[in-house]
Figure: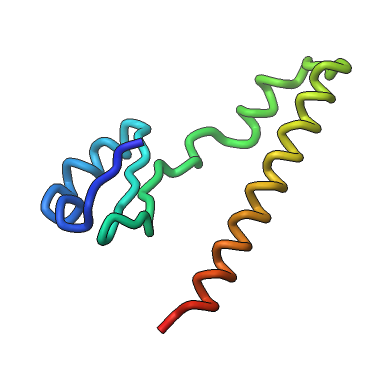
Length: 93
């Protein structure tokens, strides 16, 4: 992930868009605090193409455990994000 100030993001917008186009994520900071990201559009593969890749795939116990771990981590991240949003809204000016 690339991190830039608002000033650098504005001055180098086309350059950073090129990096995003090549798959990079750009985090923008204002006064040292991250507040935005420019991310590649994930609409790069159709659902049909994605389905074809995994059409013959069969999950095993290891995959189920991995999926459970991922789900737990996503839930934790969602909770942290919700907490951060609530914290920001509670301290807005």
